[in-house]
Length: 354
Image (cartoon, rainbow, N blue to C red; front, side, top):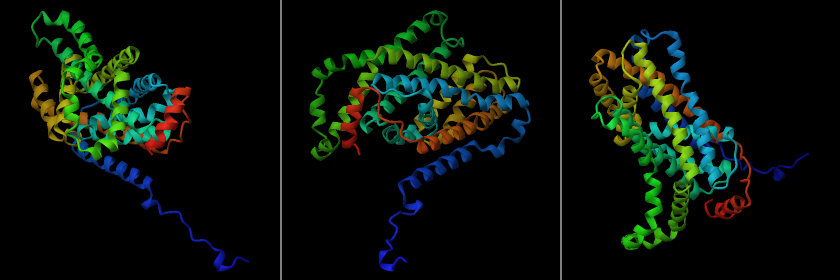
């Protein structure tokens, strides 16, 4: 019989006090924002004008983004010496794309470096560089694709159309060219003097991490294979998104082209992103309404398109993104990186970033 003195008190903390409870609280907050912003309770009349096939097809197209996003993530990590399957990277890549568009100024991305470290052994500083590369390049390409589509809608002078695509390809490579020239520019600019304005305590604490993130960012920008894959897979992603949105006005009998639909969607998304508000609040809707009316859509139908976009694209996309986040949180560590260099980097830097 066990004596009372031999019974050891439990050291396990309650779930609500564990770090994981905070991750689930964030998930609930994100769910509340998505449901509130979709205003699905206002969509009754608009949904009644859509046939059953479109009601199913439009939300499901959000899942079609899984493949190009996961392949894009695999190409990025592969360039840094990590070898993981696209399947294992699907949750974290889909979650990143969702919060990149739905949270204020992509602020939801702050959780991704820790997920990279916990599941894939990527040092936090490197994870920050990966996230910055993805989000900056994605937003840059989104803006370029909007300009390209705009040039094909007839809004630009006639001579712009034939040269638009070559110009956009050159523009896609501009960031890499800038990074390649950065060392030369750095020698001519007083960058170090500006760095001295940062307090010593901050520089000593985060200086190495910032250098590691910057080094990762430079390696990715200067890797021609990664840049080419990123552009190609982003183009596929954008095409799926354009078709998904274009199906909504088509279902309502509105005759707008695929290029016009992409201009409306991307301009609204960028307005929402730059507003710094959750899901863009009113900025996205206002821009989309204005552009739809400019393309000949009546005010009533334009309002229905905006409502259906929230309910059939943003709401399912947000729920799929939430599911991806929960999968990423519960994902077991995928093991150490495959290459010796990456294993050594993860082991040495990981201790510093714990």
